[in-house]
Every structure is written in C-alpha cells, then in structure tokens.
Amino acid sequence: MKEKAALLFVILNTIVILFQIALAFGAPWGAASMGGKFPGKYPVKMRVVALFNACVLGFISAIVLSKGGLAFGDLQPFSEYSIWLCVVFFALGSIMNTVTPSKIERIWAPVAFIQFICCLVLAMVE
Image (cartoon, rainbow, N blue to C red; front, side, top):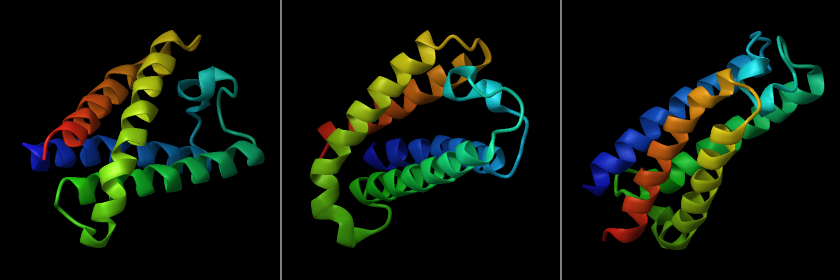
C-alpha cells in the first residue's frame, strides 16, 4: 500500500514540478499559479521562485520515495518525521488551491488533495 501511495504521489508531483519548470522558462501559464497574480509569462523574480518551488517539490518527492521504501534509504530516519510536514503542506495546498481567486488554478486542488491523502497514508502505515 505504501509503495503505491508513494508512486502515485511522485507521478503527480512530477507533473507539478514540470509545470513549475515550464513557468520558470517562460510558459504563459501564470494565471494557473500564485492566485493568478501574474497572468501570462512570469516576471524574472517569479521565474526564480518557480525554480525554487520545483526544487522544494523535488526534495519532497525524495522524502516520499524514502518513506515509501522505493528509494533514498539513507533518508529513512528523516522521512519518518518529515512526512508529517508533507501532510500539513499538502493539506494547506489543497485548501489554498480550492479558495484561490484564480478559477484556472483550482485545477490543482484535486492534485494537491490526492497528494495529501498519499502523504497521510505514508505517515500512518508502517
């Protein structure tokens, strides 16, 4: 069960990471992120933020893969505790993507909710 939860999480997270990288490289999808505050192409400062977001999400994937027993075994002790930060992060992400003023950004709400559930499963299952 935990392996499936980790794999589903990483698949979804990879999509989000690729979206962030696309924003960083000038994709005109700003309306679907950050509350739609920067429609079209992100300004340079926000492109740096998008790259940072991609890196953070990549690290979260490493935590999830470790907790799921699929990779990064050296992170296992760290992942035992940090998975709970992931649970909180994606619970908040689910809420924020639901209440965002940007209608198009709401497409991320079910993604974040599934990621939340996957993290919760990983946190609660040994």
